[in-house]
Amino acid sequence: MPPGDRRCDLTERNPIAAGVGLALVSALAFGLTIPVLGWAGAGVGPFTSAALLYLGACGAAVLLGVVVRDAGAPLSRASVPPLLVISLAGAAIAPALLAWGLQRTGPVTGGLLLNLEAVWTAVLAWLVFREHLGGRVALALGLMVVAGGVLALRETGDARLHPLGVAAIAGATLAWAIDNTASRRLAEQRPLSVIAAKGALGALVTVPLALASHEPWPEGWRIAALLAAGATGYGASLRLYLLAQRRIGAARTGSVFALAPFIGAALGLAMRPEQAGWATGAAAVLFAAGVALHLSERHGHRHRHEHVEHEHPHRHDDGHHTHSHPEPVAGEHSHPHTHEPVEHSHEHGPDVHHAHSH
Image (tube, rainbow, N blue to C red):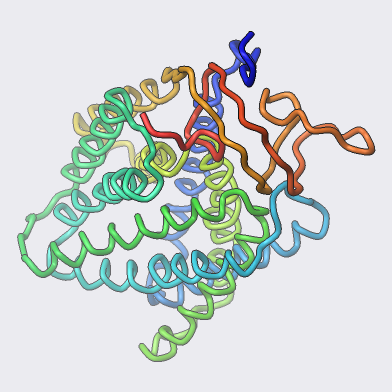
């Protein structure tokens, strides 16, 4: 075997499928909260709703952090810029643009345009992280975007085209894509710490906006329901989303997460099945095809790792982390460590060790 060459016995694993599975459960956790938001958030202002959702996520992360220790690097000074970006883009700019745009476009056009978020996320992931997509992922992304469009067309009413409204909703999807991309910078940190920080910053942004908008404070049961929805849809879902990003990057995670609105719509249709029709079935088939393409993706080739010193969650059975510890360590853990140059071939996803070009 040539010097610096090491073969990884990882042929039985499909790291991409594992990440896709996490993204699917993340979409499920978020999708389950959509009917709750429609029920408990009726008549509640958008910024008040967002503030309660963020507070629910922050509170759940803090409480869970007392008994659970996530593997990951601690938040540091370098974590501040991406946290500020996701708080500003995802908590303030995107909701405001969406609310303004929907008032001028109607639900059909608005629903169709919201599918741009997955596209923007894929584009930004390629521009910022040089994530390799390939034809299979591009096809999966396209199928899921079309599925979302078909689902939006199921809604009744006139689709009005207002240029400024269209631009506002497109801007909202871009802001959420920026949120998704910045979150990738935090995926190697402890997820519960990221959720607590994002929830606290999100609340700090939305509470003043709610007060400035003179939104009325909701009744007690609505507050409790929105806090619970935040713990699930913004807390548990985000934790799984970050874990997925560790394994499959921003683009694939964003593509799979496009399933979340369909899950919410499916729950609504389960309660009112008479509203189901051909469009719902067609969207389900397209989403299923997109997910199948993601789950069946396999990517492996010969590649080289250069010398690097960094910290991130890792295991010692992944073929890349062969350093020793004074005491035996099992499972995923995080600490600063060094990698020597190595060249090898195995299946991999666009994780922290495989951001190479193709």
